[in-house]
Image 1 (tube, rainbow, N blue to C red):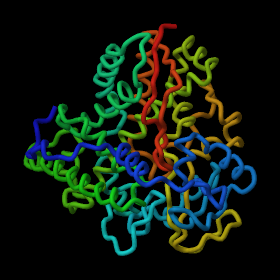
Image 2: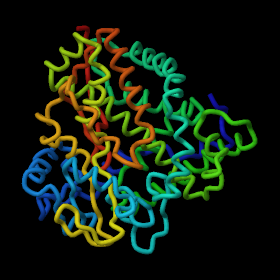
Image 3: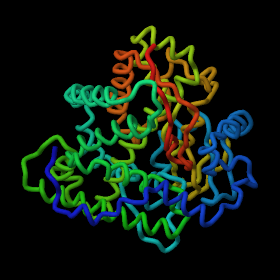
Image 4: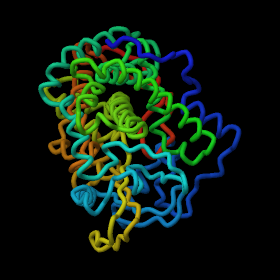
Length: 437
């Protein structure tokens, strides 16, 4: 593991968490009902924290797969809810921009006159996107996956062996967060004793709802600058050292990324931290919840571990840990009969496309041997497809394999809290008990 960076960690803000800050804010400022004038305004966070999102998306897929919401907390936007048009848009990056200067990849817009923007390669268009993506891609090649597999398996086994049997505990904290955060620490060569900071930063960076609360948005910026300072310490330690496989060293030794300014450096850190933490973490929680929802499918998987690789794809499809990505039209465009105007905000609802019944029969059901599970769009499509997809798949596969070795069945008790957000789709807390099968 890396040595400690040249920064006093005792001075870092580590409390409250983003979740605690939001809860305190809404306790002090009770929310007006989020009931929408447009029933298809699926930007409302309560749809996800209360698990009510399936009905409006099903209605849209049936009646108007592409439709426009004129008013929301995030302004006007287009909903794109089915598989084919989302792939179509993702295949046209010269028309539908991801660039932060045009609006970026989430539904939230920069405030007028606000120059606090975090460029990151997922929120860049070509050609700059290409060079920066190529810089970090070597960390996720098949050869790197093979190199890391033994360590991931060891850490997963140690985590599972530390769990209490037949006693309640929080699966999110003890398993999902622990494994996802540990993996990030390995990728960055991050000081192991400080790895909890990665989870803390990920939650503050990934919650788009905070952007609509000025005092919390300001607090988030302070936290992100502290993230940048910490990683600058790591950069300074390694800048004159020989290349190593960690992501910081890859950036240092890359012509595309070794001259990033502070905001671009922070932006790419946020991308890699949120992308590597929230997505894997929430899929690991989703597998515990989802397999319990479909006991027949769980029994099928328990009886035949050869189904595990396919089950990984199906669990990712069924959970969809990032609900949407956003694009902004660079020109007027006819999208299957809908007139998209230049500068229109277009929301690609992966969470809905992965329930598209024309592609995935019985789409609301988790089916571990589903033949086309790999067609899911949870990792995106085209030039912006998740660069760490192989690593996420590997971690989830190993988790299922190690659970199978221990004949470990996860039984949620019913006590859970979901993320209150329309971007990250997952769980804050999930009480479970584990038993032998």
